[in-house]
Length: 213
Image 1 (cartoon, rainbow, N blue to C red):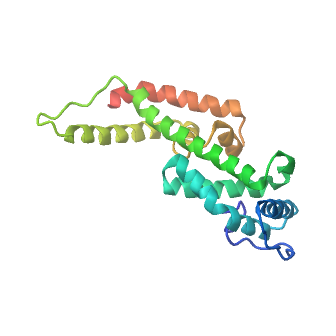
Image 2: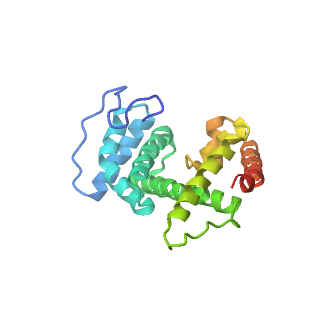
Image 3: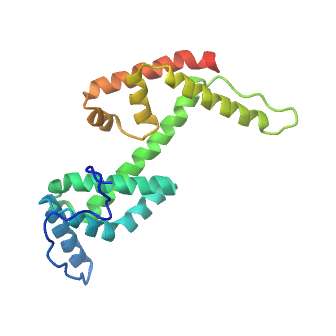
């Protein structure tokens, strides 16, 4: 979705687009996409739909190769086109093609998602890394599975016990996959404030989680 709530795939036109020429090769495609970016930076939202049609499939394939998760790959592509929509004026052809720019945005966002996934795992292991599930007498993994469910419930309860601003910052970082700078932008708060909230929240979790577990 665009920032104004409209669908990426069906943007409302703000002014008429000139008829698009049919690209006959990679160079023609690059030039056509550069013209679409220029039109988008001038306020023509229809250009975003054309870019989406041209780039969405390869960008999705790239995101999926990195994350190995179809839902995450779809979310990443949507995020990238929202960013393209808001930053079209910053595109510089001399730095590379539109596809190269979009692919770089996609790769960076996908890596951020992977880092967020690892941070969520670390939140569990760091908080109670010395606690291990008991093995079932018959060698089954029932005890381990039960332990993991209880551990996840304990983490949710501990997070809910934090101050609201700490909950919000940690949820955005560990469960929404945002970087600290992105959180600061979303919350309209200084970056240092966001870092402090996350740090204090994690310290509190490390104090309370062992007792809950």
